[in-house]
Amino acid sequence: MEIVVSSFSTKLDAKKFAKIAVEKKLASCASFYKVGSFYFWNSKFFDESEWVVEFKTKNSTNLFKFLEKNHPYSCPMIYVIKPVKVAKKYSNWLEGKNGGK
Image (tube, rainbow, N blue to C red; front, side):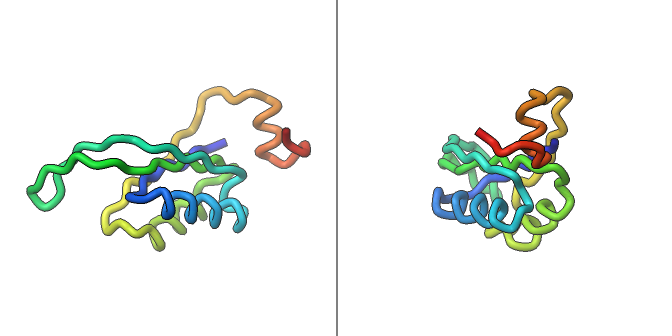
């Protein structure tokens, strides 16, 4: 299991990319939530809300490429987390070994 994480400026974009990733089978599921962000961009300080999406997948390669190519940000945050331990039932579901919930 791998988790690809990225952020989006709107809930609409977060949901759109989450849905596309799952429908295209680039991710088994995607969770999204609102966060507060501080950052500098072009020498200007920002205090804004963003939407983070956690895409759960068996293999992050194609999803990562898709996000790099299609993300609305010019410099998107995209990174991969590889968990040390995953619940067996969840891992089986992610791998398509059972029907889910």
